[in-house]
Amino acid sequence: MNAQRPQPRLPTCEPAGPAERVERLLAGQPAARQIRHLCDTRALHRLLMRQATRRVAGVRAGAYRGPGEPVVVRLKVRADAPMVSRTCPPERVATEMRLLSLRIEALLRDRVRPEMRYRELAAILAAFFRIHPYIDGNGRVARIMVRRAAGLLNLPLNRRWTLDRAGYGPGMSLAIETYHLSPLPLESYLRRFLGPVADDRAA
Image 1 (tube, rainbow, N blue to C red):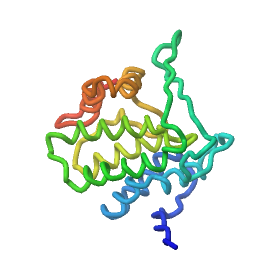
Image 2 (cartoon, one colour):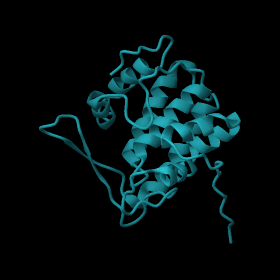
Image 3 (cartoon, helix red, strand yellow):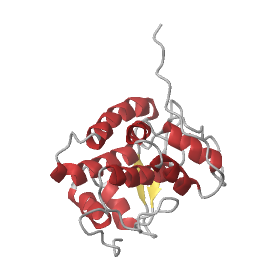
Image 4 (cartoon, one colour):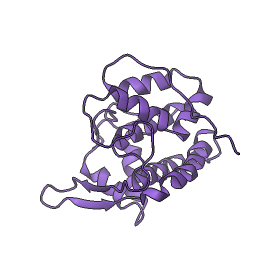
């Protein structure tokens, strides 16, 4: 019988704004431990959900979606015509997240050429939202991932990249949803938040 590898754990933080506090706790960890938590975000999700003031029915803190838990996302691209996004089938979530964790680890351990970092980060972000591994909290986990990845890769990140609420507009949501058609719009949006001179006018 194969023993399951234990999930990495984060220390408990004091109650307050969930995503910002979780990110600060993570930033205080050694780089190797941060990478482990970004490759397997379930401990981050568990901590977020335990602090959340808004409870969503059916959410299992720190657990991926499984059989019987499909999700359809309605993106607010236009108020008069929201876009419907069909996410990864629940029975595929765990497998897809294992594959994504390999890409995250390769990026954060400098196995990706510096000139390709923005493109790879965009690909990881798009894949995470496509998989939509949790019933709730996906946006906050993804934004924590980007901020910590920027920190570990020494990339500047402007103050518009907020965690508890999305600091980007519907254009970036559309770029995420249409990434499979063209990766360039999402990469362009990320470059407005991350880059040699982070542009605080990014939208």
